[in-house]
Length: 240
Image 1 (spheres, rainbow, N blue to C red):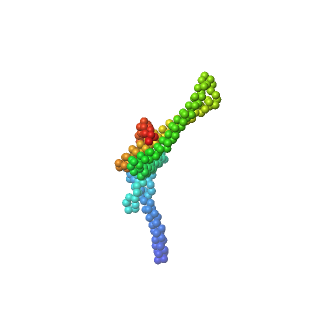
Image 2 (tube, rainbow, N blue to C red):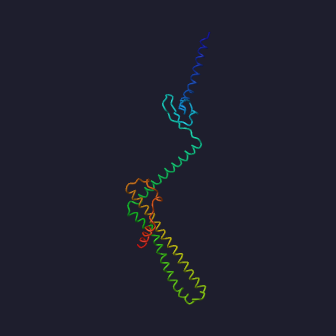
Image 3 (tube, helix red, strand yellow):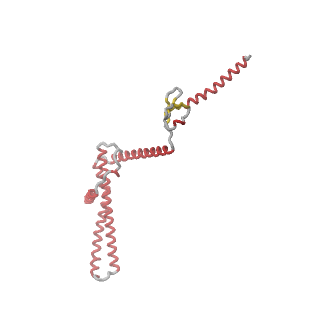
């Protein structure tokens, strides 16, 4: 016959065992209940991700049956690589859009109207125009310096020119050629400046009219002014 002391000891042991088991049960419940339906229609449930549903969506439930979250399908290495590429592309597109918005807003802050934009165009053309006029004057000066050399060379028709005279004529030719290259470069620079300001102005007109910053194509993708038109504007700017 079991004594009272033995009965008491057994009760204490059972309570201790129950107390130890309860945290384990709670910990298991905290992990969630996973459930999914396989391709062949079977509904599976488990206390961890279900291997048969790695390629399918799995619902994660709380102990009371309410949905906690959804576990997306596991990706293969190839699928993961494709997803990472898509995510990087999307991030790059977001950054590019943010940059475009910032550039458009900066452009609108810099130029409030066409008059301010025209002043900026004139200032940008000013250095090229000054350099062009200097080169053109230099070509005229070189032409004046060449006249006495040509007059002297007339005395040696049919004869070899003296070395010093030939050297002077060659140096004059080289200087004229160098100035002509500078002139062409300066003319090209004026065309480039005008084309850039033309593209800016076309963009600004759309922004002033209400286009949202960042929604227009980049300036590099907008049609640039044709060369003759830009060159004509550059020439008229130089004459001012």
